[in-house]
Length: 132
Image (cartoon, rainbow, N blue to C red; front, side, top):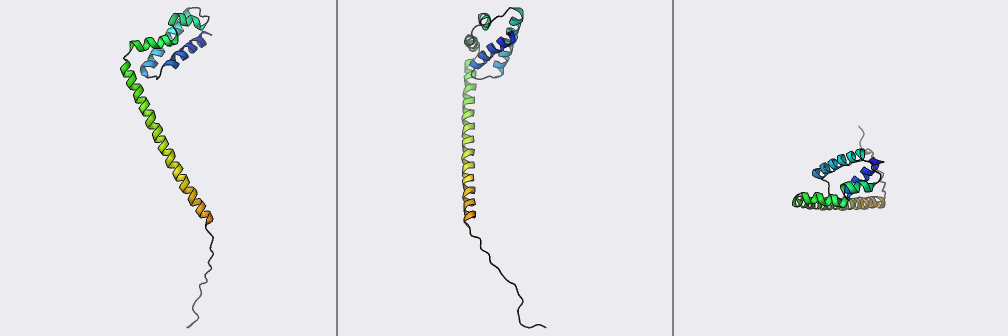
């Protein structure tokens, strides 16, 4: 039961981080270790016991941001936002190109179906003239 409470608490904390970089993952690993130690040593009955010891998840995240360089974190968020937009734009362009290509293939297929089959029979014969 204590394991599920610690996972629930860490899940709530992790959910409040806008992005998870290497630094945030290391912070969460340390926190997980501390919470696991607390759960093993103490008698944890509910998640409120973990809240009392470590604080509410939003307080934990606020404390983390108050200790770090926020400008570097903001620049990372901006970079990822721009990267997402570029990837979405590239995907949209690729989608449009594929749609245009499919439309061209469909029109070629329709024109192929409309073509009439013309059978021309040609006989090749030798000239009837001089047989030597």
